[in-house]
Image 1 (cartoon, rainbow, N blue to C red):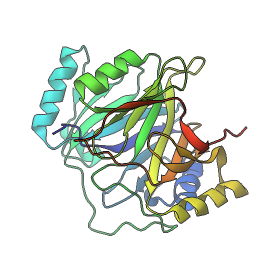
Image 2 (cartoon, rainbow, N blue to C red):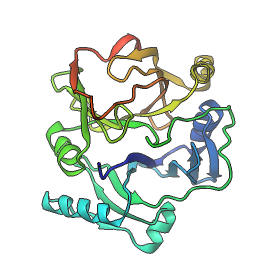
Image 3 (cartoon, one colour):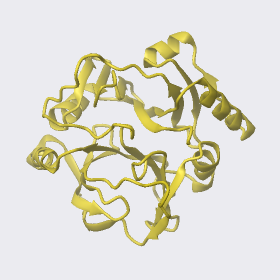
Length: 286
């Protein structure tokens, strides 16, 4: 059984909290937990939060949170990180309380993005209520996935395959360096990365999945009507079979909003390689 169970949360520094409120809640149906001048905290399910945005002048991914079962998993991962030259920081009681988890381990990935390994996330006794009626697919699979443009794929493969021991889903030939797609539960992939010539290292996109194609269609209409900036048209992916569109967030990186993603049977899955990322659609805009 894998130590890493799911991609559980995202923490980021952003410039425009109010624009994010409209984008995340009004257009895409995330529930607001907290909205102040300096912070926007969002729910997608029974967890007390899944996305936590803090206002700042320099956009940054502060934490991609990976959930484990308990302290033994954190200690084992901490040892492997130190053996590979990382210098992880164990959270203080106050820091863990601020994340609403029992404990976490923090470090930076090879490109300086924050990464955290945690357990004991708080559940909320009140039901999740989406302002648009969206129901997000998170149970036993986490928030969705992230895809990064990276300076070099080799150290990321070491981190996520050797240290975190995620499973290889497949590759896509999206440039000289193939995109690497990795899973930690039935969701086809929870993280992907590739070195793209001319593209600076950064978060490319965050994917969130809903359980109804009509929810995607209604949000897509809002984007087409000008509520947000479209990144790619509606389309279907080859490797995870997701029907989705991409939309530019107020922070510049994109969000994929989709339905119908493939789930992996670990016992029978065999990694493959695709020559293209899309069966149809996903035409870039602008």
